[in-house]
Image 1 (cartoon, rainbow, N blue to C red):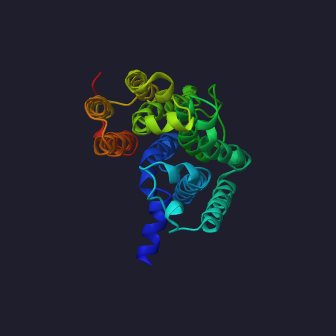
Image 2 (cartoon, rainbow, N blue to C red):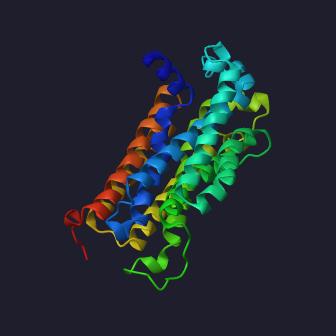
Length: 311
């Protein structure tokens, strides 16, 4: 059983949930700020289920539609569909079941989430074919990942409010809709930056196969420059997010650490483009970035005694 779970977890890169899930949970606790940052176990578990199902569906779909390219690329020839360790029928079944699980979780949250669930599935799955017709595939993936904090916000609020309502409590609520939108845009830029870094591994292969990306369009070094700018703007948006939420010292210490991690990521990516260095820059550092953001956001919302005032 453990071997089977490990195999399927590796197939859909379950460990990569660390990218989107922390931002979704951060949006959830901020949206539930009036209830001390916790929306209840039912909402939490449904948000968690929706996140896992959505990215499982997206990753299974990606492996299915890219299996022919994966068989040609030396970096991906050991993937499960290529080696036959997982059959195509099994992968399609997993994709369909996880997609249905996502819709069911959205239905359990509220009517708006349920109505928008097909739109979310379209975005997270359609990314896999964008390299065939656009250079801006990284932006599409960023938009797909940015649905996580927006979806988690809607799971709690059930609506977007651009103006304060009659029941508005607290000084941050007039900016209600701008809080998740700012975070979502930060996630888009974050993803664009580190997906460009990851795509440098396949520059030669993608160019030979006619696959498109900003790395193919501009070359690795120019694309890395764009990735650096994307991460700088991403960090600036995290600062705006903190200001909108009126966070204090703990949050600003956290995003200062995030800035250092982002700079280190680009130092590694520029010095060495070997797979080991790219995986450190892509997975480990960005995993720390997302978990750090979640930790300091939760500390600001759930533990007010931890919030040191700096102004």
